Length: 238
Image (cartoon, rainbow, N blue to C red; front, side, top):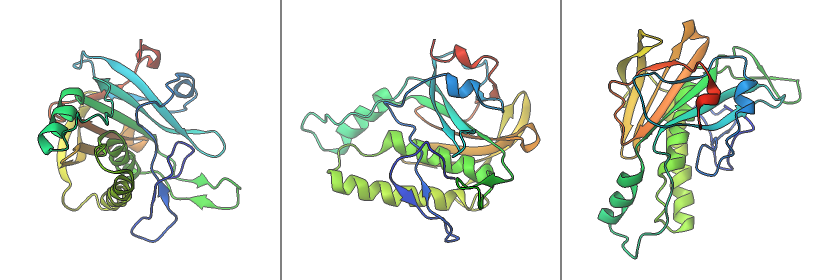
């Protein structure tokens, strides 16, 4: 899924089509409500059962400026820390990550059956639940990459994990995906769900397929969560 919200790392899908690039969801992203207000589709977040902090992240746009997707954050906004106090051992890494990263991010993706290329001469692949799964998987990586690694090794790790995230998103009916039923606007909805060493990812659809929902998190269990349309996106980040 190619948008202007992306980083330099690319992955190629299993069908050999054009490279997909990792959307940047990580710390330091400019958080402006303007893009959210320009969207033609509703935004989703955790429902009212969640009473913690909510914060804006970033929207993704097509070449013509159309808003295609965006994310909303919930919980403690994570930060990546490269200071390991001289302790490269696993215990030190666990201490750094587990203390700060208790969050859940909801990704809303507009359903686009037809998407024109930037030059108007072709058609890009349609957005789908797999698109939401890919964005969620890439988003999780942007917060949980191993900052303790040497830079060259870190990039290799990101390349490998990014390719794997896209491959997994292309095969939602296979392991390690399972089915998890969660409420969306009060209605039980089936999501595809997987866990990893870095957190969890899920993806499904809402409003009869008009929008696709992805989510990822760490330190907060996906079980028992619920999703709902955001009534006022300006409430996020206040």
